[in-house]
Image (tube, rainbow, N blue to C red; front, side):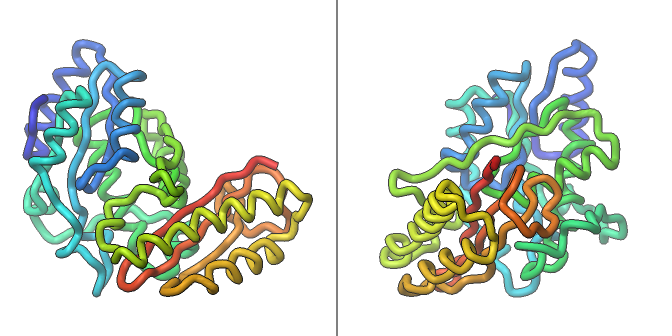
Length: 281
């Protein structure tokens, strides 16, 4: 596996692959890799000729008071995992190389960035869309791989790709969970033992919602109340949001019908966790 550190070198490598007709798959990550990331690498390995995994903790998607400086990092560990999975390139640039001068150009998604996580993290998705656009331009992939756990991000990136005519296909991989159902996340390492045990309520609440829908409940407000009541009974859990929206464009819905996204964000101590369930009704 080759480790590439600068955008210019990465672009040279991508152009060389393109000249030989090889299909590049890109898995964008912020590192501290877990099985969720690695499952995307395996998908890319199956569908593409060459696999690039970017590792970059992107400062412009973190707001004031968020955990940019504390975000877990371990490049040596990440490189070893990617080598084992057969990745061709780990692209791990420094902030000074990705943003060599003060940014004055950003990519904004105006219709979906102020909902769900965007409501409590203003500017977050502008930062995400901007860095992903830069990664697409630098790595020049034909396929991009994202996880369903960050459902809003995946929907926004799909919209951006359509709107800006990026010549690539977006693949969204399923959520990978721990044995007790907690969605894998790099931030799980922040949880205290008690909070880690209690955090399984996120998955339990999603299963409860799924059962309610299967029983014929089709009003979002009724399902949201049932989930909220369950989470509020859990020690240490503080709800940021519990919402049910269209799984296609995050628009408001009055009935559980078609493609529906149930998304939630809950804090345990200083750790904010997200999870979701995508239903086809």
